[in-house]
Image 1 (cartoon, helix red, strand yellow):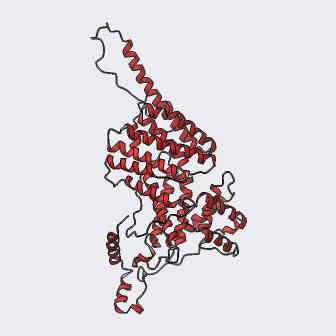
Image 2 (image 1 turned 135 degrees about the vertical axis):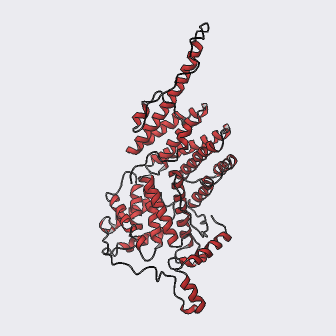
Image 3 (image 1 turned 120 degrees about the vertical axis):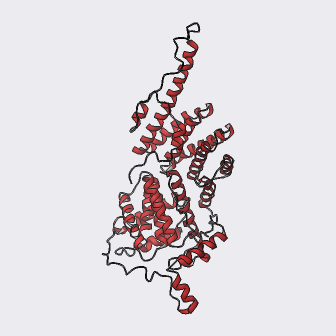
Length: 476
């Protein structure tokens, strides 16, 4: 994040650029008591008349008692990691909403997404209207970009939608939602501490919201946007003039641990000119973290695997000590994934970490790494039994095909060595070819069955690991 001096300079330049702020500055100079507020008075010739949109009423989709049950699931499963809502305020909002059942409320997208996440993380007891509540929130949030005023709880709802999509939808959908969240954060001035809000946000900043909730909202949004962007190979949203402080630790809330993990991962930003020593230092800092939740252990493991992929680019030779440490963190993530799967909690890295870990074990191609492939594959198969989805079965089929490719390659290498030992030492050399015949592999694209059939294909792990695109990018 920017330091204090840079933040001050950025704000000064942003205010100088702003035509909407200049009338206020001029008025303050002429008569501070009568200065016009910051507003786009002459932004255009005026809005067109647009018909009012009709939205589904959340109270028709779910009863007050069902809502309270889903809030309980949300506070138990989601809130400890992403504490962006005050539990007492949330309960009060539910009570007030079901007292006035006929009107649509601007807070409804938050309640819809809390209910949807509570349903998603309720094990196999999902609410039958989960998808309808997600759609209701989506329709309401899509209108937030044309409102006259940005509301902080709309940024909260966008963040909750990002969490839901990261757990259930494609990389593109998750990334777009995370970017929208960051833009809504800036629109409300939530990236700046209440005492340091720039003039350009004076018409939208919400200083009445508690500082800690304010800070958690900004930092969790930043973590999600950055990590989704890194994993998807896309640009993240970088806001100017950031002055929002990190939240304070508090009992039962692991958001501070999440942010500490993120701050280490900032070293992985593609714009960082990392040397191998920088990445090894990040790995050391990562190992020192003591994390209180299995979902955070999964993220820690994922960061370690990313460090390995970056090390492959930064250095042709990675020490055996570094490889051992990465394998250890990968196994920690694998164990956490199995425990989370047993609890039926669909955190996204439950599938991602085992898949990526097995890929990296194969790429390391050492006795130590290959000895871990079997246990890792058994764990992945167990996870696939807990979550029997088409996405997970495709991932399992793919990783099994990659293991077979690695096995076939080693068997071919062994056959070449065996043939060399069995060659007729007394035979004439004049009829023997001086070079090996060229290798030709059939074109392969498409299903995992195509991969499995390539018995003679020599898999290029370097090209595979340096590919920044997603493996399973389904339509949103």
